[in-house]
Length: 264
Length: 350
Image (tube, rainbow over all chains, first blue to last red; front, side):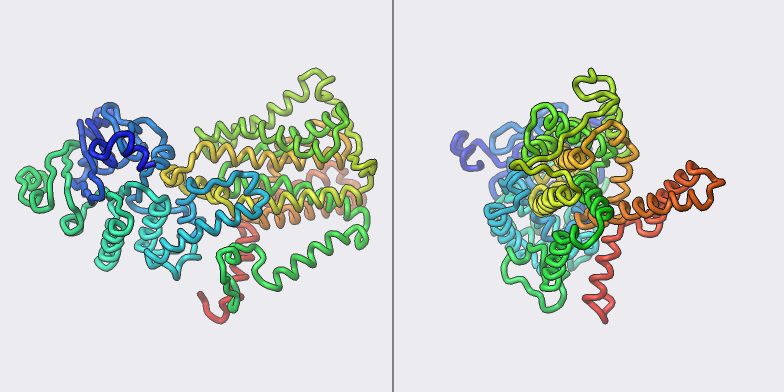
């Protein structure tokens, strides 16, 4: 999918994800005001901003939860504005959630297997009879899931119901589930929120490893400044729904508009 | 959790349903007892078992729709009715063999169920429950008000005996083997669906439809599919019912019956195929005991009058179900799983 689009549009034009002039309003509140953000190949882009700046709204517009009143969302040069969430997900976006949105009734393995759903092809009649090809497909995808479980170092809990896990482990399963989709771009909504220092360090390491292993761009919405300054290649700062600054961590730290927005 | 000493050495082995030698032995024993049942127990019990097998098919379908996919369905008896009428009309008017009418009945019910599943894309919970009640009334209304040459109206439809290669399945024992074969196939298929990507998608939609969407699962289509599969099971069960009773009438498929199917999966345990089977066994057994004991009580305390006694029996049945929901809201399978795991990890608490 990714390669095809590259071939047809040309690598220089089609960035993995581009939001152009997105405006999102809820009644009188303007959550996003003409926001344009382009994600480059293989970069770790952090989006920061004070509370209510529109960070999560931006992710929700990108993933298709909200439809912007103006502007468009492009994945590898292809306009995906107005598509359903699952259609956008199948085009290569994966997302982790602020807090957790795991499937509480399933085990860790099953949760991550759900991420493989669209990569599996068996139909319901084959599933009913559950003969050779279905078994082979299940085994094949189970292998991929086990690799992710090894990678995230959650082997001992693979058969536990996720409802019984602690917060830090749940976030790891959430990341594993997103990785199982084999996305072309990974969005993470405040992955560090509510974690202790040790859990933050673990997760930061996993995020860096994901970039290393998968070579996919990661968009990180985050409150924790230390994490952002350490991890990000580039930072976009939002305030009141507008982009007020953009640049490397060093540039952002010195930017007067950013200092004003954060300190009032 | 497996008992100690049981280790899977391949992913295929890790997905097995039968995991220990004792489980295999228990399953084999169960199958042998079922196959030999007509030689072991009286005809009365076989009639009860027939009823249980048919209910099992329908309750397993409801378990997929409500227990796994989380879509409340109070129209399962209407879906069953669509299947029963389809089989009855096909068998009486075209003379098709039951080998074809049973799956066709399933497909007819699945189509009817799918239409109501489409509404689940937009509404949830209480409102969805109301919509599925509408399925009951639409079914009732259609059968009674369409020309009686089509569906028999209030007179119902008489069904010819199921026939295979000239052998007419008329006795309860013959029907028992047909019901057993179909129920075994449908239950095995349910395990297949639940262990596949579809089963996981159902649970995903039930537990968190926002996250299910971001996984690339089409939430609306998955809900509609859950209704489609659940109704297919109801339709197959309905066809078996038609061949067993040899007559279908609209009052065999009322909201009252739908609620009993819901009671079965609640008593057995939501989200468990085996739970649905356990629930069928318990509810049908209680109903049978009450049907047996009721007339005796009515005779011995004749001054009360039969009506009050029979009404009282239904109150007792309802009371038993209510008691279950209060004391064991997660169903018997939940309790069984707790017992099983505490036995396996004994003497440690966790």
